Image (cartoon, rainbow, N blue to C red; front, side):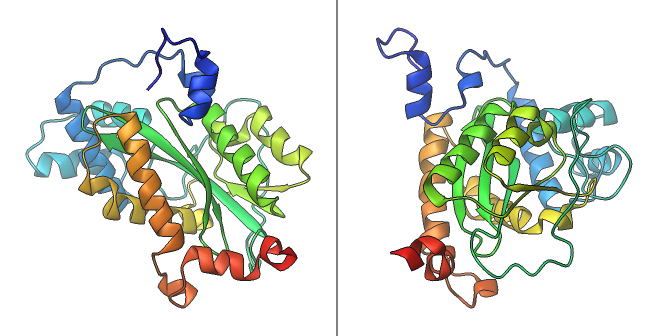
Length: 275
């Protein structure tokens, strides 16, 4: 983890640890064990019932014996960065003044790697806290091109992941995200436009528009996160790294004719053809 007394500059430590630059100076507020347990359960219920809003989640929790009000559920959902995934006014709301780009994937046949990349953020519970995981995924092969963890929901760790993906894998024709403020920020959209990448954004609350990343989160949660109790950020990063290596290189996908994402990506990618 970050050692503020070390001779190595803090930003260089953050780079080596794959932490977002903005999180280096962030001091997290303590969260009680009881709240962490409720957040973990909300995360599980959200994955099972993505259409459930704060009222339904409150009632589901109360049905399990958890004494909680709707306002507290709303507060915890906001802290976790989640919301009910159905079409309604005001969901996935960008920051004021941020430009919204049209959804470009409707009716599009995705037939090769690097044609479409997608990105999203999910909440990752730990034994004594939580972090956020952002991943860039190749739509055709389901390959996780780059990922980052952060203790805040600021845009910097998303930018780091995109820069990493662009630097190592070339660039896509289209980059798809939701309308979250991290993805509508000028820094994020400028990075894509400077690389001549077409920007696509989901409809408000339309989870199906980015369904392949939602499926990735389901796999990550059920096959890795919910089986662990990470001691801290470093432990979470190491364990998630091992899982994502397995996901890319060894885990067969029925939608890929039992191939791995690695096989699907590299068998027809421009990098492999050039090699």
